[in-house]
Length: 208
Image 1 (cartoon, one colour):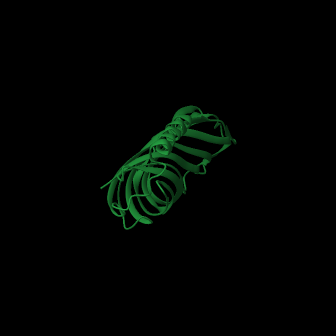
Image 2 (image 1 turned 30 degrees about the horizontal axis):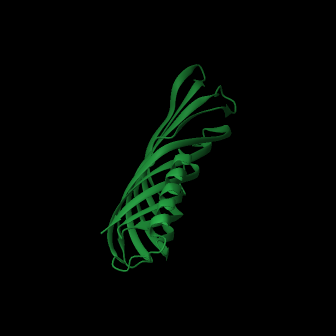
Image 3 (image 1 turned 90 degrees about the horizontal axis):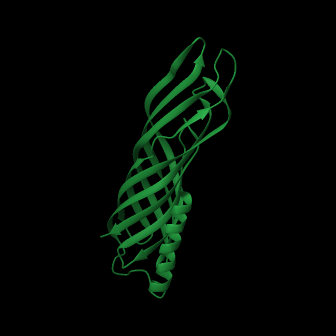
């Protein structure tokens, strides 16, 4: 999945170099609203589960992610953005350590919510570098199922809760015909229940 995102981005950048390399950044569309959509690869790892058990080795899970955003460019350098972000349903099997008859099992996380951001952009002709900072207000559902709990099997944890996480990222993109912006973005989420949470996004925006 990540390799497909990189190939798509490389193709877009190559086309922009051949077709628009001599064109300066649009002076007629320096500010205003925009709509965007993003598709990404979400990654998370877990080294313990709600203090119930220690996991043998980190759990790494990749999942498709989606987002939709409305933003406002105050000028070519500063924007504000509101996103709906669905990070999918990461799941994985694990091996557990400890006593009490607890051994292997599986976990599943369902994670979605709304993010608010301030974005700084550095235009370089038709290209842009960007950095973002904000908060992700999310609902998270965590289900844990151990293969063997004492003499029985089944779920030992089923929790649904809301939270907020610091979110930040960097990106690089290109603008076509004044209105279409495509960028590749790396974003980190500081979510308490998970470790090493990040998403690689491929975003496309229409600037009105």
